[in-house]
Image (cartoon, rainbow, N blue to C red; front, top):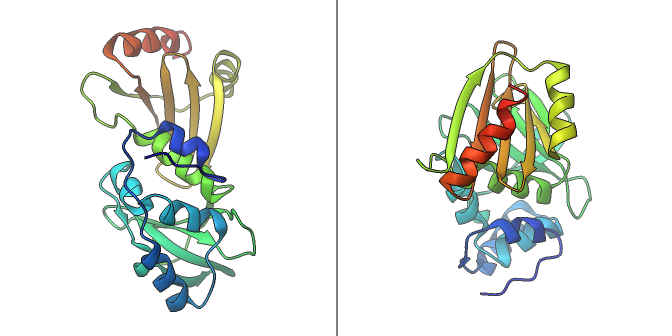
Length: 219
């Protein structure tokens, strides 16, 4: 299926094909239930493709809500629509109702009490980093996880000079999630106060070996 996207095009380019068709009636039901028109990037994600299925697939068994299950909530003075829940209910994600066509996404960490962090600058950035992070997740030949000491500023600068910087996130699962890409694959780093978890993913086992060689220079 050929899909043309205005907001989520970068994400679509990364998805493995074919992509399931969206569910227009769920969007209509959600808007009637919530009493709003959903932001354009959100409508696109769930109507042009089956966005719920994609967010469920590219995750760590997290619970992606169908639009008909969206919940409108107010947290820390922000009006949000909850659309994704972490698999152990440690946190959940919601996009802001701020009048934007492509609104920010917040993560609410370990409520109650509410601990709100801006996870992505836009909804389309959120879909991008989710697929970026979870493509090839736990694939035996194309995935590597290494736990090391917390990142130093020198290490971050070295990564920025050697690789393409991708969007960062805060709040979950580390204090900050750093992302980088290279011709051999992707680098995701969950940086916390006590450790940094390095995740390397690649399109093949040979590419993963090359990526590890590149990264080992800054470990």
